[in-house]
Length: 26
Image (tube, rainbow, N blue to C red):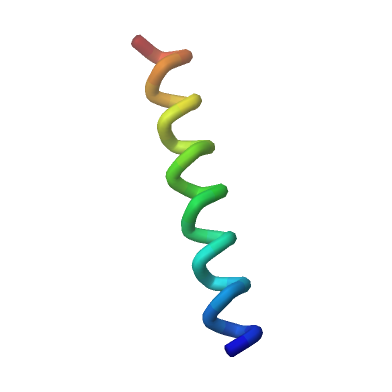
């Protein structure tokens, strides 16, 4: 349960970071 929650949060951070990186590049 805790691991799943951490994975979900990590995924959200990764997606957000990727989006910011893409925005910065474009």
